[in-house]
Amino acid sequence: MEWKLFAHLRDAADGQSVSVDVEGDATVETALDALLAARPALAEEVLDENGELADHIRLLVDGEDPFAAGEGLTTAVDEGTELALFPPVSGG
Image (cartoon, rainbow, N blue to C red; front, side):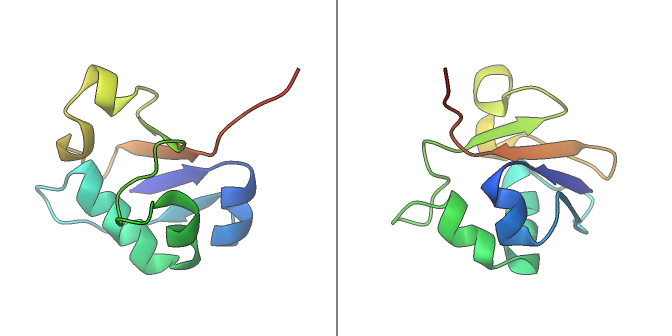
């Protein structure tokens, strides 16, 4: 499964994408755990003080927000799923 990373998250992970292996009945949460195990420096960037996904981080599953269009971190994923993490975006 492939994670796409954007902006400073790329720097923390040493690359714009990271492949992770997950079990057959994986969820977004297990895929995120696999990503953070593979790239521990990302944890500081994407988790809050309680170890939860920080409110300012945007996560997409196949281009859609799993919190609005799915079941959040319990959304099912498989090897063909594309996951993405975005930091806050601002500008003018």
